[in-house]
Image (cartoon, rainbow, N blue to C red; front, side, top):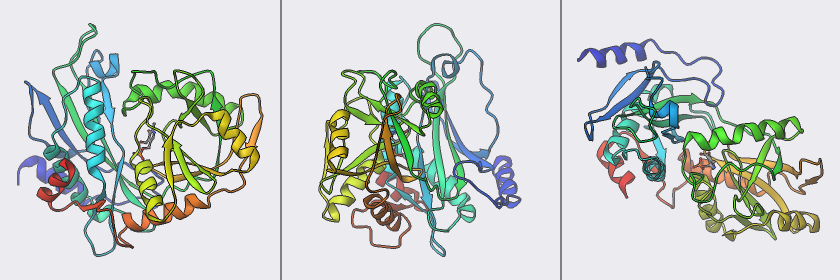
Length: 361
Ligand SMILES: Cc1ncc(COP(=O)(O)O)c(C=O)c1O
């Protein structure tokens, strides 16, 4: 066995999951790494999880040339681990890379990273309801220079986190009318670090005002709902599911798409459309809008109990976690293999060839 492989095997042999694994807090002791240089990706491998040396003048640190993804692997007792719609994460990761002038990680390399990390950590994937191996594909530019241009060298990492279920207690959201996390023609529709950095200050302000998270509006008119800082937004209006249409400045969530398709499958109409925030407030006042929730890979759904303004004005929802809990349970049943998967969303991690084919489709 080559030295690196036996080092990884030794690390895994000595690894024990801590008693508590809050969502995204425990970092697995191994990761996958592949490097891009000389115009091509070089063979990747499992390596010990460790700090990555980085030049202080690198494009990642100076210009935010960085992208990432968030996805989950599940394992049920006596079956091998599965991934949920990894093709969508790969496609989004590719779009993020291209937007920041980074090379696309080929589907085969992405599949190899997923398969090797997930299968190596199979014994450490917790199996209770909602627990998973959270996966964070990450990529950044290495070249050191102060001229605003791209890089010729990049690192791709797949980091993993054995995680407990993330139950979001109902959140109170504040309509953010001053700041914008994204710009028209900017990077809001891809998953890059700068979007999150741009949200931090406003989010801190909304927490200081007694809310939990900011609700971002479109950066052009400042009128239409976009999303939360790390989740998409959904409303139940007249018993139907409504979500903001993709605007070019909000992220196309895997969970958003899955919940809309699942709702249709369950006989619930779902619509993606322009959603003026003032119209939504009127719909809450009239009772047409009964429920709001956010959705994303981590929590699947986060029920919203109230929506408000910086002035302190607030509208409470009639229902908290009614349709959203039903959708969450249905989705989790598919992810955990407790029910049939009518959409073909779940794919095994062990068969590398089949996984690479699935990812490319
Ligand atoms: C800004 C933003 N919107 C929406 C989402 C939800 O996306 P997904 O369902 O793919 O996790 C996320 C999470 O990745 C996010 O960071």
